[in-house]
Image 1 (cartoon, rainbow, N blue to C red):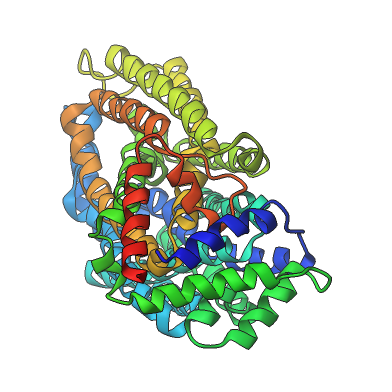
Image 2 (cartoon, rainbow, N blue to C red; image 1 turned 180 degrees about the vertical axis):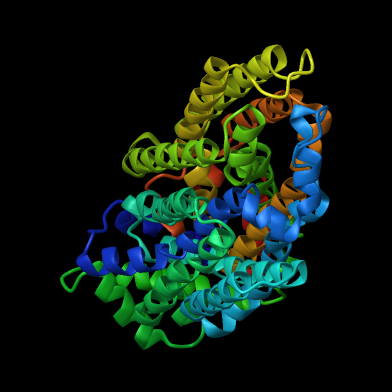
Length: 512
């Protein structure tokens, strides 16, 4: 980084502490955050559909045959790789498209990427609803994945670059709020379509077109972010956009100047964002780029979100009650995300990571104990009703803790910590790693449940302990810090400051 950019970072503290919330910024951010609807709807719909009898009869009759086996292991009822491929194929497609979206964003802007993602998801919903064979299902899922990859890369960055620094956490959390809202809509849809014999699953999959249409219409009306406009050579439009979202009476000169400085520096050192990440001065960003999505997936929440109906069927609920359990989890998640929205900019990111991590770990250990004692120990294929409800209650507590911490913060922290020259690439890598791990987990979860049984929850609890210690030791607090001033929080950190110092020294040598 140049000396000018370090001065800009120090100056940014002034406007970073302020920043009024205008009608324009609220409407713009809500429309961008609605991109979370499509990701959430898919997470919620796939787990419910994969345990519907009409869906299994159409595409996976062998699963129903195995479920009827008198001595079938309670943990292995749904262990079928093609069935899990239906769910997991979305994530590998999303991983590939998120990497492509990084380059497209630099040339076309974040608004265009969100629009493209919505159109691809809409196409995928049509193909899935009309599916006649497994091939059509997988193709439809991959189109959905391309849409998710594009929108998940662009929307959180859009929110971080548009929101006032003081309230950036709350606005970026809105993406996760809509994600959870989409999941809730999907599970409610599944609850009713599960009663439709023969083709209820088509309704569930086809209604994915509703949130996709909302995203497409929303993307048509939002402007691009000031940073993206400056990056693409439109400074006048960028300043007008910044003035509109900050308010007509707000002096945006310092903030706009710092945006221009950051973009000019990125252009002067344009050896490529991915290549740049190999430098020592970017070591802290690279570590977080890998750690946050990796730890997020190792919370186990992605598989619980996707496979919660299957999990509840495993412990003894019938199909309707299993989907109703998923509806309850989605409502709990929505309430916890709402609480997180109000406290994230007050309590801070680190506090929520620590509190949420401890609570999640305790709940997972408790679920493992109940399953170990009361499911499959004496060849039972179901669990006593009281204990099944206990698993549901603990899963709700776990979901609330997740929704308060890792759920929203997985989107908030990566979108705000990267400097502009690597922001698109950093977010792309974060999303790509997360989706790759989600692919691996959704593909392997049923097999792991069959093999590890109750110990799978001990496995995830161990990882939650590791990630909680990691966040306590290595993540600096970023609440209320302007994006252009984010370097300062790393420069003050007990460990990462050595890398920031080296980067500054190298920059000063290059300027001589």
